[in-house]
Image (cartoon, rainbow, N blue to C red):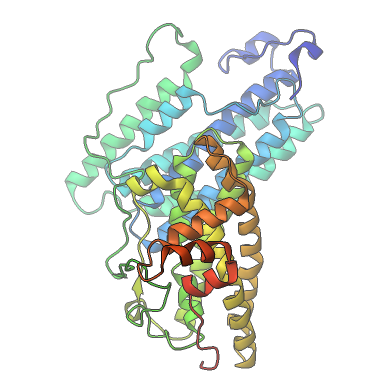
Length: 450
């Protein structure tokens, strides 16, 4: 972070409404930094709120695409931050979303239905694009060329992203006049919230911000009590102490190496778990959210990889049963355990099985399935590294100091406590014996049958 005293007393806070009238249309570096921060916190808030809504959206395809969008908005945060830290004012490691930004986005996205969420998403997306366009017109193309370059990176996916969101809103008000009226009223409310938000710097800071009354009594999201999933997915409730993916009721492929493809298809639940963590955890370094957003999107992408391959092989969703993702209470009370268990057990224990699956697919001549596994293996190595780095930091927030080895052993012990048939003495030994633990936690596939 650059100290302002090195820049002859440049002011830290710039009114977004008045910055250009002070100096004509020309912006000093500190002005640029302030505007980029304002955009960055909006992108970050939008990214996190999308993650919270993924749990509330029942439609599988929308879940997965929103996982991609949460990642893209997070990537925009990363691009903006790269420029901000080069400018006076910089970015303090302890800085967090300003309260008025948080309040505005909470009001805009605490909605009564997925339809209302998409209306808000489209509305905010347009407002973000307007801000970027206005800023690009005002940036000096020589003096501020590095800022222009970073903003252009943010706009690479702009049209694709906007077109998809527009498509989700086409039929939000088509089913009845009542729904049409609800959609219109919600958009009017969004306009009023944004009007207050956009004029924030003109308000007397000593007085209460005049937010409009929120119209929703019972919100559908973000973060509902239980994760939602469309009815065509038959639910499977994992039994206490059950070895992962061994119940033949889950899958018609349970006695085949192709079970690995089904396992990939189910990884949207891992994406939902990480979405819960991404939405719920606050005040961590931005680098944590950069890694977490990538990890989350990877899990949704893995699910797409598996679902696509199942369909290519001629299988249908109703031939399988599907595990469920976490809801509000689980995420709120156990996000540290969710994260450490996923990275230190779910992913760390899968390498042997996946390598053997890839070898089997190559022997059977199934090139695409083999390469699918190989790409997943590459991703999973990064995910375990993420968990090793950030898991202890999450525990530190709770006042618990652990090494990543201790964190992994604790995660294994929690899992072993679900197995009533294992004695306390054996649980302690198994928690410290990674290969033996993984043999109990997960299962081998029939690599000899295609």
